[in-house]
Image (tube, rainbow, N blue to C red; front, side):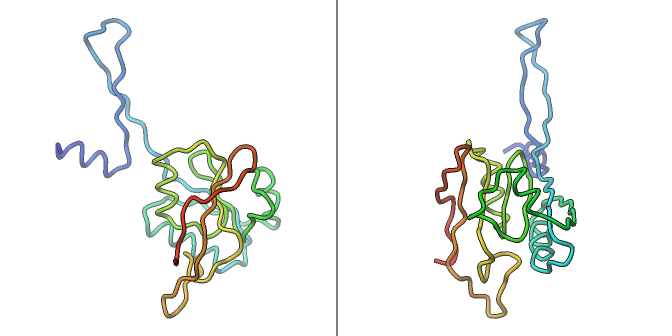
Length: 160
């Protein structure tokens, strides 16, 4: 692969060639930044939420944190189904991300761009990002995807 393209790719940029309206022979290139900005809505006193934010930052995301007295308002606004709720809610690339979803699953979501509303890990599974155990164990948990009709299906499984 061309070293320049590899470098551009490492920055999370997508080069899209566009036809020039004046001449079908020439092309222009538009650079579009891939979204790595995550907006996290959390309680000001939640330690595991802060650890999850650090997990995202350690995995290359730019994270903005909004401490909110009532995170349920953000959950409702974004359409997070009540049974899928956890302690924090995030927004990234037009999706919601509820709970302790691993950064790798968020990257996959942003790469594949499925026609869903978001991802959710209900509750606070032991060993998930932000809920790490001292011995490194990961209790089995599922990252769910929620479509526009509220249907829930599996996106990824961890600790199996």
